[in-house]
Image 1 (cartoon, rainbow, N blue to C red):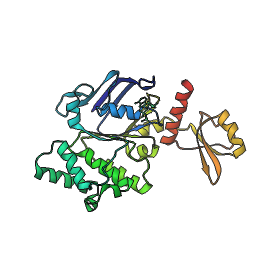
Image 2 (cartoon, rainbow, N blue to C red):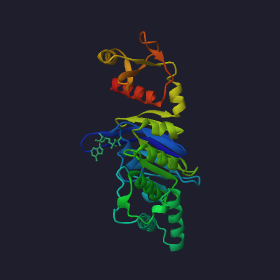
Image 3 (cartoon, rainbow, N blue to C red):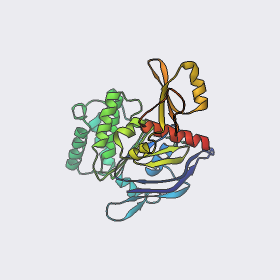
Image 4 (cartoon, rainbow, N blue to C red):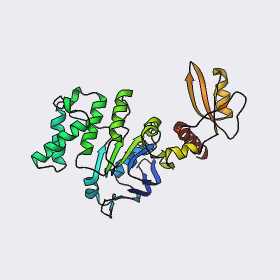
Length: 297
Ligand code: ADP
């Protein structure tokens, strides 16, 4: 659906935000996972035609057997694109209905009757119908993000990009938002950029992990998890012993359970007495890749 090849971008300050990024993004939900500064937003903004790359290519299949050059044919991409940026601002004094109508006009929905149908349909889809006449300034974070999805879906896009959409949402709002994303059409590619591992675990049949401008891993979460089978070990340690463990083992994560640190360690064999093998999860995959990358750098 979307093919990215060798995409690179260096900012004027010398930061390599994208370093030969190559990715194939299929239909459905695609999770782009990485810590802050990984280059996710730079990639999202480039795909959304809001900034230029230095080199490389990105093409989107047009649904009719052809391909659109994202970096050159910006107007054509924009007709197929829905984008929810990281810092989606709304006009606080305008109602959801009025602002969505306004965005619809900008998207080229000039026929009033048709526009009304689309706008009403979207407000229902994102569950804001009952509050459509309320001013956006009074909306919760979750409601604002759902409004953001409604505007991203205007014009039936085939590529939908959402950048860090669940940051700052409480668990209930987050679930609601992710369920909404999961319901978006079958012929659409949805790229969900996030630093929250569970967003990807819960939702995405395919994904990539990025760090420092590079793609560290891409594929199906289940395959990546399977590759760590029998190599993740868990132990509850004393606080005083934590320092030593961090030094001696490849510690993937440290979590407090009942006030005591519980560590996950990556190792082909039992690291020492007291460790039990655990079934790996995507968080283990994520931290293992980041650790490996940090070591190699
Ligand atoms: P992410 O979305 O994964 O947090 P970004 O793409 O925002 O990552 O940033 C990648 C790197 O590029 C970071 O080191 C960031 O500081 C830097 N960066 C982002 N935008 C700019 C810019 N406009 N000018 C200079 N550096 C930037």
